Amino acid sequence: MSENPWTDRIVGERMTVDQEFSTRIQQSEFSNQQWSLIMTATEFEIEHPDDPDRARIVANTDKLDGVIPELDNVQAGMGAMAGGGAAGGSSSSGGGIFETIMGALGMGGNGGSSEKEHREAAERLTQEYADELQSHLESKGKWDRIRDTAADGQ
Image (cartoon, rainbow, N blue to C red; front, side, top):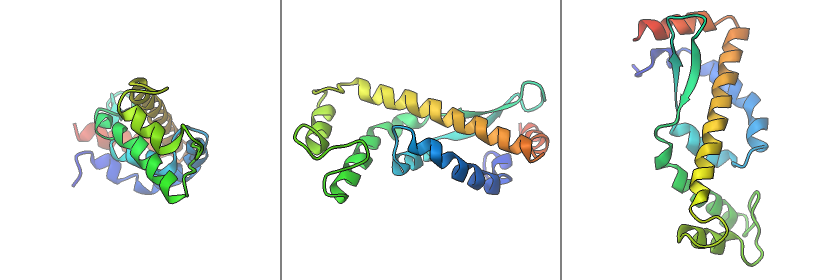
């Protein structure tokens, strides 16, 4: 049994939201592979599950620090597989692997702010996903039952 039994009850709903949210991911700065990595480090919780007026799904991103440094590696690996070009990347001089190495050394255009910017963007996007998930559950008439399950689990 998982730590949050309510999450076990919404696996099918999450798959639907994942499909609907894929357009939003394509419009973001993250590739599908990077988004998958972000989602593995994100846990969803229900704040105030015992209060129907205040209850809401929130993205707990406390574990993101462990994957944020890997986001550039995922993107660099995709570039190498595609012959040097990646989404948002370039195979021209000054881009790609050289830029990744320079960034890792704290040199170049991104400096140390890249990880901070990635984290902030990931936090915003995961909360958008959480909001979309809650909206989906509400539209399907499942939100109250899921909220009750979360309240019982506390």
